[in-house]
Each structure stands twice: as C-alpha cells, then as structure tokens.
Length: 82
Image (cartoon, rainbow, N blue to C red):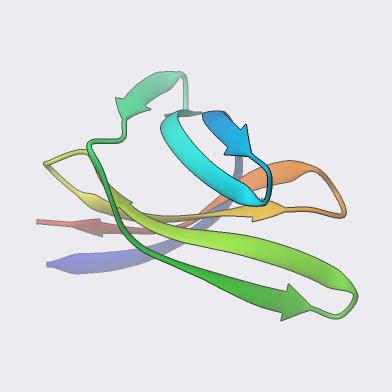
C-alpha cells in the first residue's frame, strides 16, 4: 500500500441533513469517483476553520476528504492505493 498526500481542491456531490454530511462522489483530475462506503468521520480544526473529515472508499482505493465549513470547499487530503 502506498499513502500519498494530495491536498487538492475537488468537486463533491454530498447530501446535507442538518449537521450530518454524506459525500456520495467526488471529481479529481477530471475523473469521477463513486464513494461506496464512508469508513470513518471526524471533525478537525485549522485555526478558526472547522473541517468535516471523511475516510472513504470506492472499493479500489481509500481516500481522506474534508469539507472546510468556513471556506465552503472540499479537499482530497490523502489517497491510499492498494
């Protein structure tokens, strides 16, 4: 397995239910990745910025993505390839 730090802005399709966020898919480098499972969620802070973090899989690789509530954008933080 190889863990790679990416830190790239991505487009994400997500369902928002109150404070509950469920990412469904994301687009990175013009390719759409369907999220098959959310393995783990947590919240983090970078100064005054609140991050909603997700460990997800597309059944091939694992990804860490995060939603920055202050900047209202998504990042692909890490990719773990098989």
